[in-house]
Amino acid sequence: MHHDLFSVDGPLWKFLFLAWPPVVFVAFLKLFPDFASKAVLSVLEQRHRRSLTQYKDMLDRDTATVVERTKGQIQVDHSTLKATMDFMAASQSRLREHTIGAVQVLWSEILVLRDVHANLATFETMFLDAEIAEAFREQDDEFILGWVAPYADENKIMQRNVEMTTLEAEKHRPFCGDRLWLIFVVLRSVYFRSAILVSWAFKKGVYTRMLDDSGIQQLLSGVVATADVAALRKDRARGFNQMLGRLEAMFLEEAARVMSGSEAFAASLIDLSAGLQVREKTSLDGGRSAG
Image (cartoon, rainbow, N blue to C red; front, side, top):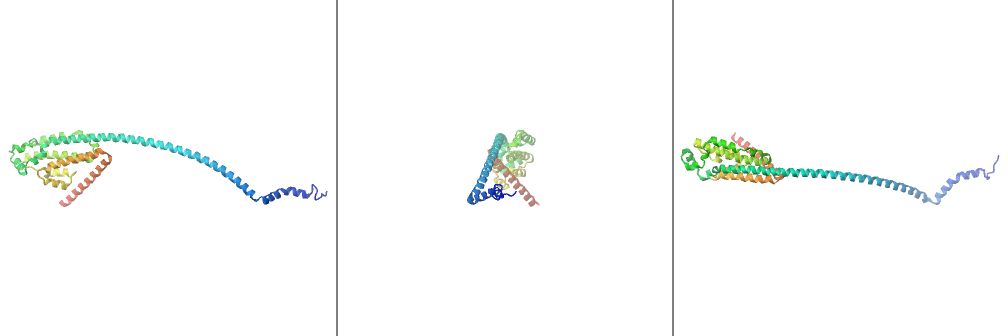
């Protein structure tokens, strides 16, 4: 059947029915060109705002978690540090008490040595070289020899030296420091050696002055410079007595450093190391000279 072009069922109406939406859309864009871009931008902005809000919420949650975790770690670290500091303070306090006790014991023994051997310190100060030499050679001057009569028996001197090497002092050695202990041992050994020298003088009839003895010089080299020993040897009357006083002063100075704290104690060890290096170098130079 033939249909009219403009009838309701005609092809023109079908074309208009199918084509009007695109035509209207194109016409709308022509009439309102900014609407599409604004609509697209609005949609994108809303999506971006929603994403940003979600990201911010997630970041806030993560930040809060990190902050709480960090706070917890700081509290743990603070507690550990405080416990460590408390332990170190308590340990340092106990160590300081042991150190002070060790110094007291060693100094008490030095005072005993000074009292027991008081005449040794003044013997060379009281008499001239010639007077001492004649007294031991003749063995008949009771006044001069009376000052050192207790040292005539070598066996008694050796026994007394052993008795005065007390275990009490040895017990405190770990708490006094190597340098302080070295000064103490040198001073004690000088007294012991001096007592034996006087005992040998009674036996042999020949007296050797304390600072002229190679054994005492070797003992002193551990803590006193060789040049200082040589200078004191020139003072025949007071040299030995001054040397004993110097050793005591060195002990007290070192004791003050050891008792004052760890920094001074470390400095003490450095001084000891330097002194031993100088002594070793001196010994090597002496050996080369002798060779």
